Amino acid sequence: MRSLIVYYTRTGNARFVAETIAAEIGADVEEVVDLKKRSGLFGFLSGGKDAWQGKETEISLTTKSPADYELVIIGTPIWAGKLSPAIRTYLKTNDLSEKKVAVFFSQGQKKLQAIEEVKKLVPNSKWVGELSIIKPLDSKEKAEEQILEWCKTLAITI
Image 1 (cartoon, rainbow, N blue to C red):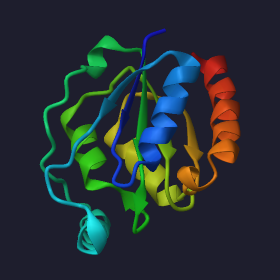
Image 2 (cartoon, rainbow, N blue to C red):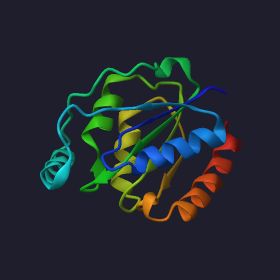
Image 3 (tube, helix red, strand yellow):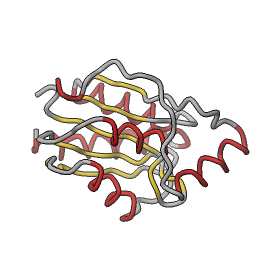
Image 4 (tube, rainbow, N blue to C red):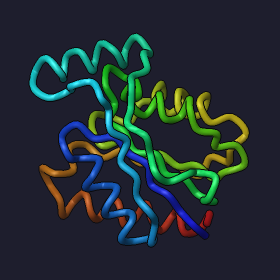
């Protein structure tokens, strides 16, 4: 089954998770790039505010079409209990109907609110799971163990 991992990262945590999953299941990877500056303290604060308010943002064009894949894994940090604006924009502009969809969160606690937000943005898709890892770059070995365990549960559904 062809799989695509689409992620946004501000600090590199989601990239680490995406690349680890990709290596384990043989998926293609696409980074969503937010064209609004999100670095530093101001970027962190404005990102949290935009996420909390449910705002979208301008993103760079992506090169991989989710239409070409059976499984799409979405990766995002949770900011103020919500999805990052870049992933919200990606999900609103790409149709994932009839796709198997999973999500991973690379920062913060797993939040029911964020999971429900993803599900609303991917109607008519088949939900296959979620993973939440707090600051994976702080403990790569522990994060890799969690990721590999999660990949085993994905293997059952794909």
